[in-house]
Image 1 (cartoon, one colour):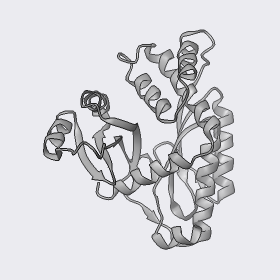
Image 2 (tube, rainbow, N blue to C red; image 1 turned 90 degrees about the horizontal axis):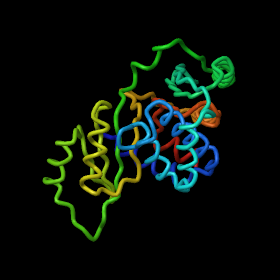
Image 3 (cartoon, helix red, strand yellow; image 1 turned 135 degrees about the horizontal axis):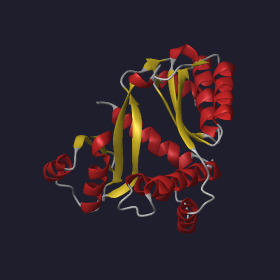
Length: 251
């Protein structure tokens, strides 16, 4: 999994620069509501809710918004959402995977098919690209520069919690775990009092597609942005790789 540190840096920068805060809050509120409806309102007994709350805090969502979302999940107006994934290929054969929460599947599939077609890509069948991604837990913690880390001791502790790989870079600690070990790894991070900036289940591409043509890259990024902007889409994953030259040209 070498090179994933670059992914974590991009995620941190993207999160810091993302101006679509209200859209992000809406998606997080929906996730909290569904998590409560499925597994109850106690974060200690509901790993999905615990993760949703962690993500909400990482996005600087106000505490009262989180509490309202939890109460909504306990009530009768929580909404009847269905979890569904859509897969396809964007321009230049880039694989795209979208995780959705929707109360109208027909609307969602029609919207996503339109977005794929507009980009020059195509919406595929279930399983058409899922096999290209590995589901992993990813934890990013900020290190305290005034407290030197004993890396060997920390690595042993993290391995005990299920860490598969650990990276130290630029004042951050990035931990990768198997999906099945996400809960255990989250508890271990809490026990070690790590300053977590994010704790997420992600789909990491096994291989990437390098696209050198800036115009093709723009089309792919436009598709990804449009998918992320859709109210029914919770997460979007892809296997696009950008070279340094293309990044520089795009500014």
